[in-house]
Length: 325
Length: 254
Image (cartoon, rainbow over all chains, first blue to last red; front, side):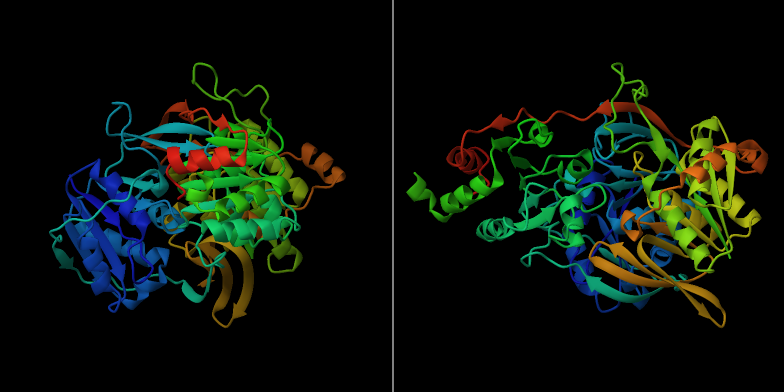
């Protein structure tokens, strides 16, 4: 059994989503191939990185300029090429925007069913055909049975630890690039706005704001965020009011995050919002209504008005721990 | 130009879903079924194209049991020209659905398919890419703004899409499959007289088995489960207590 993991990257670095996907892959097999598709210029650095990710037994690389556009048809065509060279038991990608389009497209081309957004690979002894994934905006789990082979699975990266490093690099195999097939062309890229220079999906601490925060309190939130070195996210309602940009929207229709600490301020906790933040390691809720659903998922809660609590947090955090003690 | 818009019937996402005590299925008693909000956005886009004379007709299609006639009626009331029910009583995988939609898209000679990026609830994001793959049409996923452009060798679409690193603008010739985000537009409300008219419309039906499409599937739902409970949260009295917990118990803050 060999698992093929598709490497996601930004042109210079393999993404942490891929490291987490490799952790998931390791639960299926010891034999893990990582497929790196990039331009000629990008490939050497990327393959070198992929080779030292713990658990990787072989790096496969095809280089062509058209890969750097990330078009679905081109990436899928090359995966299919690789599948002709080697028999795989599983094909894995993370369930990023990229994975959400490339994996089902590949499934369509191969006439195979596939599983989206798998969260755990141990399945209570049900067997290797069963996969668990969240449904209904992550309010329930479904166990899906898939008998197709190979198994095409996208992995919710935030639920897996990132694979570490290995001392002995895996061998790198260069394969010829399949010709460009996509009729689509990429005409522009607009980088996401980053709040305080911290990408919300990478920030260790994220502060989420909801309806309980108005324009008046926003400077306070920004100050708290800069002290904590946190990114700021928001619910749909806040984005629609124009308080923060839509790239900061958290939840089912926005981003899914899994920081070490999520501080929800003035957020009631609608399921659509919780879907995007549930994987956070620790959730702190600050809300003046104890009945708000956010308290049911929070590890710690403070019942109180944001206007009062945020300044208290700021002044307490501005003191050093020694002073507090 | 003809536009195909597949519409799925889903549980109203504004209400929380509950499992039956024995986990055998969902507690349907209080559930209200609606048109998938993502598909509603796809339909609105199609209707706007028709209103701007970019398209001549909009066909709404749904696959499932008779209950799906309701979402097709909603689609007609919003302004779809025609509706079609593909009748089946079997649970359908994304791949089977994509096979059926391919057949209809080709039979009806559609030029573009607008479809919600996911079914609200099943949240699997599969049908649009599978359909594009089966048709061998360009795939444009996660559209947030769509512009139609004419050119000598046919029509092209220029689409602003969501990606992992921000937004990306893609250009593709038609025919194409375009999956849409909720942010693309705000769907219209159907007027009361249109709702009444749609109620009386006889919607054509075709049996899925009659299409000559492979209905076999290799994926099925084995069980539904509750989420593992988070450890019971603690309501702390004040900010110093909170920071103490984060520093000393969770070791997150310095």
